[in-house]
Structure formats: structure tokens, C-alpha cells
Image 1 (cartoon, rainbow, N blue to C red):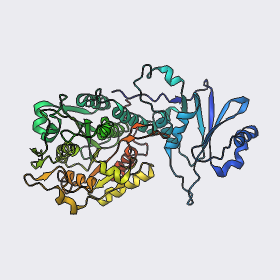
Image 2: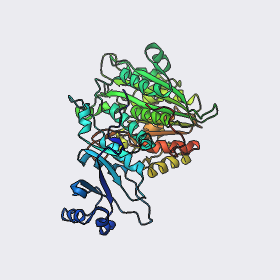
Image 3: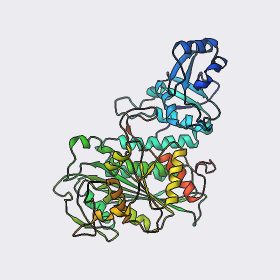
Image 4: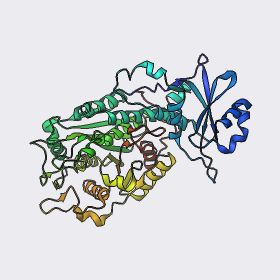
Length: 490
């Protein structure tokens, strides 16, 4: 799957007609006439413009050219600006077609404006003609510099668009083989060495991945990719990323109800998010050694499908009893986590759409963060807050570990109690991670249930911006500084 270009961005030239969006706070309304003229200010007042956050109005500018006003939140009591890049997504959705520049107070960053506009401009459609150039011409475009078009905010938007595209693709078009090919198409142009494992080799190396996928005619794949930044030596920190790529989850013999299956094309959202994050790490040429592992599989029902109470020996040597075939994501991850740990990475991060329990606890917008190191967890939480891309930590509470006991195997893939499901899933995964390994597990929803500014309904990858900043904080460099210029652009 190629990286889509950001047609919503227009590089400034003197030949283009450009209209203006003014970012306004309620406390600044008295000075509005000085910015847009008395006629436009009066028109805005008559339209009921009060500069409440998210309020957008068009007013007549000079020579009757359209001018837009967008209300944003006031500064906090401590003078800090509350970051909300998504709010600028409203401009991409509601402005008339044309080229627009944004004039904003100095405390609002250009990166937030560019990122928010791009996220709001995202569309996914398989309708006839939906990819035509004419469609892009009939939408608003944000005027940027060439540096901004190749900058961090635009790169973040490209990666998030990639994750959204992968998640939104229907399962009949995005099976394990297609997901593996998409990963190769993204990673190889940026210099990664990519291996796709399937068939007998996969069955031997990743027995639990194979067991999950044996019910489907579309056989599983494991993608393993390795890359090294141009400024990373042999002793550079090793970052290892693992993603759950269940391209469709029927639940297996423990079949999901039809209502729960309606969004199961998104069950590869962890792999999509990891692939997007890896692309961003590589495009920004971070000074790391990188390993990526994706478990690409389909959980289907057939005469060959895994059964409740099957017992399988994992890559780690632990035997696992299948207490429930719908708890397949952790089975996909555990072999990959164990292999990733063999290289003793400086940071091991996995992302998965793993449990409904995490959504009951935190809702759709907050990915659950589990971590075996308090200092690392604090850096991830801090980065999430600073990037307006929050996470919420839940505990790996050891008191629940016994709930995963099995009478015939080393452990069961489900808890014996109907509580704390996100925690017990994390505890299951922890059994496959070395005790001294710095490890972060993210349980994400990867979906927007409704359309909001910057967040259209459909697949999404919350946390990526926070993860990117946190990686640098944990491994000892500033990923956001801009000093790691892109090695290649996809």
C-alpha cells in the first residue's frame, strides 16, 4: 500500500489566490476589527460569533474575498496553551475549496495547525471516482512552506493516514498476506531489511501464531524487519516494536455475536499502528537500531480451527491451554515478544487491540498503558500529555496472576474470573517477557465511533504521536527536535 501524498497541503507561491483564517480567542474579540476590518468584525458579531472553541464563520474580507474566523480555547490560568491539534481539523472539513493560510497567536504552534488540518482532511472511500484528482481540487488546502511539507507534523500525518488506511480496508482486501505485503511496501523503500515468514517455517518458529491462523484458508504471516538510522552505530539503542495483526476476528469456535463482528476488520489496528510508528521512526532517521515484528493472521471457524482446551507449546517453551478461542490476540503476541526479547532491546513496545475490558475502563480515546518499569511508564504518560495524545496507565497487578492458572498446562490464555480483563491479558503477555526487559504494552481501540474534528469515523491510531516522543525520552535523545532529518521520503 503506497503512502498517500498530502494533497491537502499546498506549497506557497506568489501565483496562487490565498484566503486567510484568523484564529481568535474570546478575550481578543475587542481587537477583531483591527485584524479583519470593521465591516468583517460587525458581520461576525451579527452572525453570533463569540470565538467559542470550534466555532467557524466566514466573513467578507478585503475586496469581498472570503475570510474565516476560528474560535479556540483561552490560555490556562498558568498561561500555558492547551494543545488541541484536532481542533484545526475543522478547517479541512468545513472551509470552502481553495488555498488557505492561517494566522494564529504566537503560542499556537504551526506543527499543531499543519497536523490538525491534515488529520481533518483524511478521507477513506472505495466509491467510484473517490481517488480522482478532481476530488482534491474541490476541497480546502492549507498553504505551507516546503520545509513544513517535509517536516515532522506532515510526516506524522502521513504515518497516521497510513494506519487509518490499513485499518479501514475491508477484510476481504486486507488478509494476512496483504498486510505483510503492505508492511514490506512501506518499510523497504526506507532502507529496512524485511523478511516474511509463512508455512512450515512459521509453524516451527511461531507455534501459537500458527495455531490461531490454522482455521483460515488465508494462512498466517509473520513480518520481521530490521533497520538502522544513519547516525546509529553498533552500540545505538535497540528499539523493538511488536504489533497484533488479526485481519479479521470471528472469535473462532467461541464465536462473537454479529454486532461484535461488525468492526473486526480493525483487529489488526495494533500492527497498523506499529507499522505507522516504524515508518515515522525511519522517515525521521532517529538514531536507533529498529526491529519490527507483525503477527498477520485471521481467526476463523472451520474444521481445522483451534478448539477450546487445546494445549500448545509456545516458542518460549511454556504450554498454553486455549481457554477461549476469542482471546487470540495475546497468543499472536506472545511468540513475537519472546523472540524480540532474545536480542535484549533497550525498549520493547507492543500495540494491540486486545481487550474489551480496556474500553470499559477507559473508553475509546484512551489507550491503556501497561509497563513493568515506573520511570518508563512516567515518560510515556508525560509524552502523551505534552503531545495531546494521552495514555492511561493500568497496573500489572501480580495478585491476579494466579487467575491464569491451568490444570493441564503452564497457563491458560483467559482468566478464571470475569474481572480485570485488560490486566490479566497484560499479565499473560508478561510471562513471555524477560523480567529485566524494559517493556511497554498498549491496549488500544484503534477506531473512532463517530466523526469529530480531525478524527473521522473509522480506523485510527491514537498514541502514535506520544509514542514517538516517548521513545526519544526513554532512549536518551529528543525525537521532536528536528535534528534527525529524513533519510528518505516515501
